[in-house]
Image (cartoon, rainbow, N blue to C red):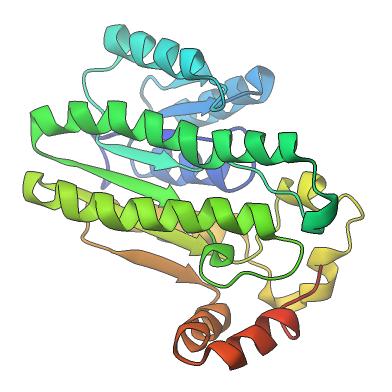
Amino acid sequence: MKLKGKTILVTGASSGLGEQICYQAAAKGAQVIACARSTEKLLQVKQMCEELSQQTCYAFRVDMSDPQSIDFLMQSLESNVEKIDCLVNNAGFGLFEEFIHFDMQKAREMFEVNILGMMLLTQKVAIKMLTKQSGHIINIASMAGKMATPKSTIYSATKYAVLGFSNALRLELKPFGIKVTTVNPGPIETNFFNIADPEGNYLDKLGSYVLQADQLAEEIVSVIGKNKREINRPQIMNAAAIFYQIFPRLGDYLAGGIFNKK
């Protein structure tokens, strides 16, 4: 029960990686605040977390594209939760499509959820963490934010933004005892791809590169409270991303070839 007495807020908590992070944190004794748009599923996550942690947990419906919804969440937390020890910004979505055909309204929605809503919630939580001079913010970015591939123009742009934001925020908050960790996963076997890849072929093409949500969630929860700058998985994609920076021409070859499975 290493997280007993800690309160963890997770967005995008109704399924996939966010759901698994909730369970892993609860199993270690944390009080979990699960947030997402799917109310019915959230209540199931809340119930499971309470069984695992043996304490009161919470579920709040939050639309990360709506500032008023985020404001309502923070108001609700004021009357229910004394503090937030860790914020996991997991909510987000992607859509794989060639840029020349991309619906720019969808692009706006993606930026509102993946970066602007995340920044707003982070600001409000960080202000509260400052009063305690402690806390941990974990932002789920993506390998797409380190090495872009075809058909991921908008999604990659949002994740590049998450990386830049997180790197600057880490430096700003470090003097106040608040840690910032960025998680850069490759493809995870979740319903994320129900929207991103409606044809359902992408994960099958990737084979062993595909991550399992429960395993990644366990690793993420294990670093809560620790000075961990980044988690990059799988290792082969991280190595490719490093090559991308050092040898950009080779990086373009890898991104447009071996790792282009869309």
